[in-house]
Length: 165
Image (cartoon, rainbow, N blue to C red; front, side, top):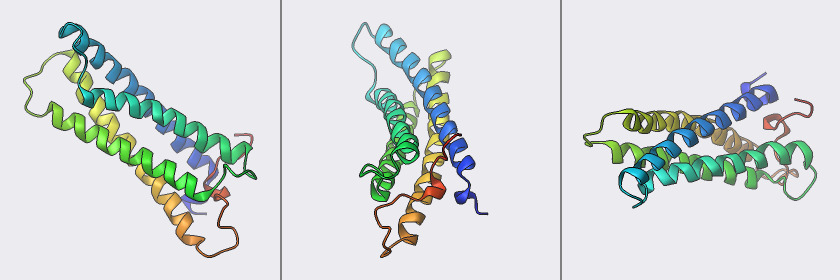
């Protein structure tokens, strides 16, 4: 049995995606709060804010990617192109977010816990991007594998979360 046919593995990846998003959310929220208080309310850098947005978006995407195939498998919400779209957009957000923060941190004379938190957010953002790239590749393989078949609107149950897990 291939790894993409194992629903338990996919659920494990989804849990890891949620965990990394939570870690990045905590780290970037700390950086944003520090930056706002240090610069007397001028706001935090847009790179940090974008990773906060990406973390929140990830939770919304995971709700869709877990709940719809599990509970609404026979509805119009469960479409393979919608699943691929959510996967791809989330992967692009993570890539853009961790790259933007990495570039922002490059060349800064920065020490202390806030800089360590920003660097850790970059690292966890990169790991999150790798997980989303893997699940996007699985969704792409499903779409390509089922081109021209009668089940063009169904998501692949093999890469969905099984009921009761």
